[in-house]
Amino acid sequence: MKIQNICCIGAGYVGGPTMAVIAKKCPDIKVTVVDINQERIAAWNDENVENIPVYEPGLSAVVAEARGRNLFFSTDVDKAIDEAEMIFISVNTPTKTYGEGKGQAADLKWIELCARQIARVAKGDKIVVEKSTLPVRTASTLKDILTHTGDGLSFQILSNPEFLAEGTAVEDLMDPDRVLIGGDQTPEGLKAIQALVDVYGRWVPRERILTTNVWSSELSKLTANAYLAQRVSSINSLSELCEFTEADINEVARAIGTDSRIGPKFLKASVGFGGSCFQKDILNLVYISRSYGLNEVADYWEQVIIMNDHQKRRFAKKIIKNLYNTVSGKKIAFLGWAFKKDTNDTRESAAIYVADHLLNEQSIIEIYDPKVKKQQVYTDLDYLGSRSSEENRKNASVGTDPYKVCEGSHAVAVLTEWDEFKSYDWQRIYDGMLKPAHVFDGRNILDKEALQSIGFQVHAIGTAD
Ligand code: NAD
Ligand code: UDX
Image 1: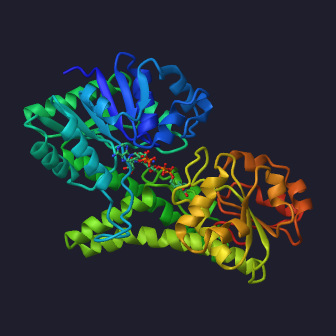
Image 2 (image 1 turned 90 degrees about the vertical axis):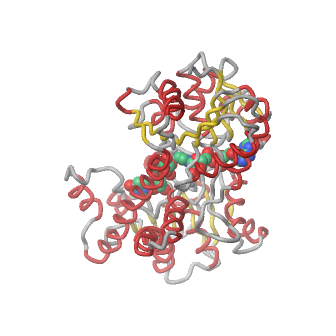
Image 3 (image 1 turned 135 degrees about the vertical axis):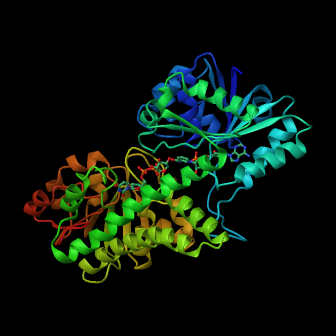
């Protein structure tokens, strides 16, 4: 079967970039990305392509090339479903905030709504592709809804989890380590798998396109994220030990990373991992394991989250301890709010939790991030519900000039590893600060010795002060 029309439901951090790259690589396929969020769709269609809602290096160029040619963004979900032979579901699947599984299970209400809408609108057979990260066995729920409400049409469900990381999304999509496609191992299922293989096969070498059954594919996505997050929590746990023993976590990471079985990637100690995926997916893994009565499995993975929460809290406490055990009324400058560099995404960013802790101690926080808008910072703080939004606006402010943000502060805390922070005029920053001037480098990106020679008291992750 040759695919000519693709629809993607969900124009977020995954749907947008993924479909933009498919459209770029397959100019003969019409790709329509739909969303119920009108503002988001309007931003994707903004005349000035720099105003698209997702900041990713290289993305605006890809969108500029394909948009209006074979890439379209629309709020008309029904029309796009009707036209497409293949429908990707790329909606959000956040941790449940209510009811059974609250705080752990993935909330699948948006997924189910999509399935019901597809069933209602479809007039012909469709291939439905799970692009969202989903609990293992979700495909059976989708199949149930589609086959019982879909007027006798035939639906094939594929699992095609996305492995892109934010900040490198375009690179990851253009040259992925692998593409994973799971489907029914029946003649119809294999045909559907092949249709999707043919899409990716335009630019991904065939040996990097892995095909398997649906359940292995669904579980592989949760597993990949759990493994990656586990590496960060492992190195972070040892960073604390380093701070007590004069071992240097960067040296330890270098030493173990040269073992080819361990490898050098994902060994950067930090203030803690953030992002919309790691925590959500591990919590989901924990929930699924426990629901099968596998308590040891659940406890094992839960520890990754416990360690990460500890790392974020530990960083905030370290600031307080070094500012003579009180930050009340003291200004602390935050460099970075995004959960990592090269993205404007702030979901689960460590910065939010560190700020919350310090605001509870009556600190005054001023924030600078090159890509995060002021409104987003307040949305993140308000979402925690720790204090009124008036108090958040009174005690936390957002600036656009990093030097002004640092001026008059007792401490500067680096929360995101943006490259530009490394090349700031740190002497100028020092001159404008109260003394003793502290730097808390939550990303180990600054030159500790150079800062010390200016006069800063420098506190990094995983090295003794
Ligand atoms: P997102 O919140 O940025 O985007 C989801 C979009 O879906 C939103 O714009 C929302 O309005 C839209 N939506 C929700 N319900 C809808 C409906 N019924 N009809 C039309 N639109 C609807 O989320 P995201 O970061 O793109 O993540 C999407 C999925 O991909 C999640 O399951 C996530 O776990 C997974 N994932 C994310 C990443 C990542 O780096 N962000 C990477 C891999 C996988
Ligand atoms: C992750 C997965 O990497 C990706 O494959 C999946 O599709 C979605 O989830 P993402 O969350 O976008 O991607 O970014 P990632 O690079 O994995 O970083 C996650 C968090 O871990 C960030 O806060 C990052 O700063 C932190 N991190 C990462 C570290 O603290 N140390 C490291 O060594 C690596």
